[in-house]
Image (cartoon, rainbow, N blue to C red; front, side, top):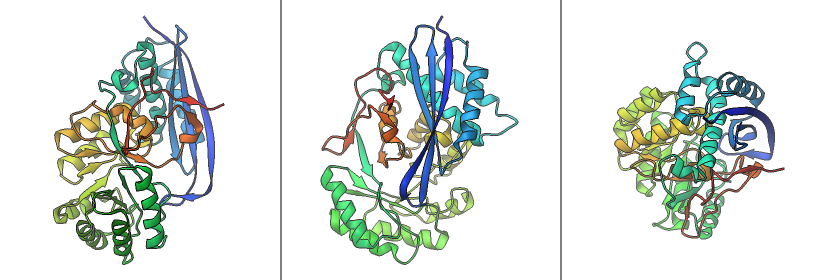
Length: 350
């Protein structure tokens, strides 16, 4: 029987030269987990905390690893995940889930490396191309022409689509019009509101999105406004609502999907608690005909390809990628696919 013999947690504090994204993020803390078994095989996992504060998460990850993984028999990752998750009964998900995410990725990587097969196959899928769109670099306060210029660069570089950022105000339509005119009618276009809207502004934006042929509008309301999202979904026509990056707990995803709120669901690796719950969300979403578009990390989430009977869409927004090497490379057709290597193929840079 294979046994996990050691666990190691590292904290990497990464600062950005300038704020990025719609929320003006200035940095991210990365929690790296390494698990080693009695055959000397290692699994590498990671999680992150946008905006910093990862020290607490790193300590939680080490506590979870020491309590539940060290010197125990290696089992299927979902088995370990469920056992650790059960211990949150009195403390809640919150930071616990961000810590568990790093361990879960490491467990999946270790499992795949022991089988000497790509992570995607260890998860029950296969290496198939997945469309990749770009969202990095867009600023919600940029002039319409600036957003259009960046969008054209992405499309010319071979991305399947772009997702500029908007502010849920009267300037949104000019941005959507400029970008659509610039990239043409065939390229995929989405927009991210970053939770800034209300029912009135979100309804107007959805109507504009339908006019300019957008695939979806992301987080047009605060993520916890479930009643608002229910009202908005009743008004939505032809354009999907995307949400989920802030969800913790399978129940949040289930309510959103059962209520028909989201046409696109966006689990975040850290917030959801790892690959295990993201895979479960993907399978539930597929049964509802909902597109799965995970938040960030396309080079990791590409390993969900073929693991569920539905559509997977990946987002390119570099945030922790430069800390690791071994990411799969996008081809000129605007798609990404997993590498033919053991595990996820990623290594921490020296």
